[in-house]
Image 1 (tube, rainbow, N blue to C red):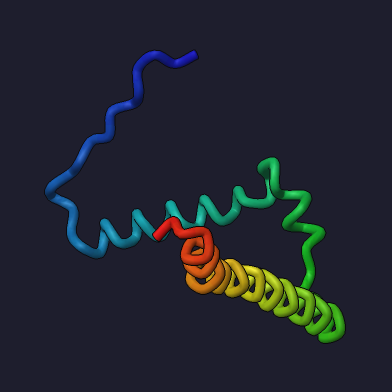
Image 2: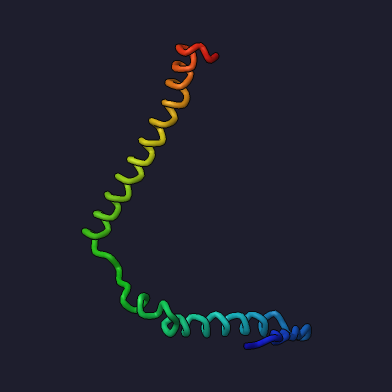
Length: 93
């Protein structure tokens, strides 16, 4: 268990190109480690979906969005139209 963090030293004498190369090397090193972590197996098994799979997923997602939107609209109508009418009939307003 580490108690102290390693301090980062900042070299103010580096040129812009040296800093850019340093950042680029860090990015490439991080990219190479992606397949070795806990999600590496999932990323290795991942593949591009076929057109059929894509369209099925898109249709199901669209239907779900329409269903949730419809339910929200019905709730909106109940709150704005039905509830005031019931309150008026009962003499609450």
